[in-house]
Length: 249
Image (cartoon, rainbow, N blue to C red; front, side):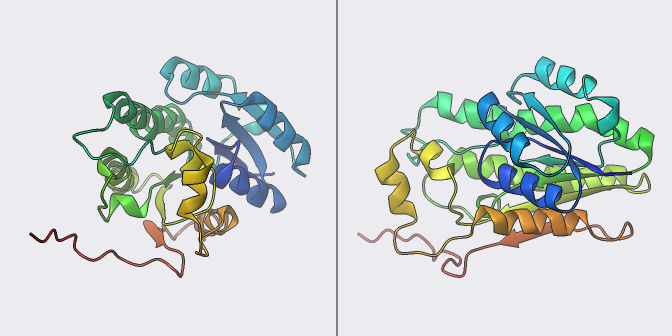
């Protein structure tokens, strides 16, 4: 019987790459995202059965309906990949639009919670499952302008660890994948479509690729049942930890 993975934010970047990686290994995919045309295109390119869900994870009722509407042929869901998320802006905390903070909280935290809470009881009932959350190095290391984005990813890290604490003995695994600099649509979204700013982020560097993150996700999911990967923090070879930010008079 084929295994099934449910991936949010599957229309680009890590989510799309993860869908392709799992499908290449024979998994069925449930791919969710806001852009229906991209989902249908991806579905047509995957080599295994795929169920598409046009979904904004900020909408709890829509998340609940999507999980309730999963076709029987895609049950049980073996792995949930909570990939949907975003960063908005690099302004300081005294300048950023509060609406940007709210959107990051609603997506990166609340959307992840909605999807996890909707699927988790089904995993527990089935006696197996794996929740893989997409965190970030920003959840571990602060940087100017990272304010609420980094805070949301710190939440993801701790929530994942607490999930594991709650679910031990129930055969449910939990993993936080924490990428660093990666070349996806992330920066284009952060800078609200300003492609020049987005391109500058990757100028002269060799960042991680979406496929690198997808490999890590699949590796964690494909470990033997007695192995739980708590966290994977990964950076591009050109990236390391920042020095302390010291302002001199």
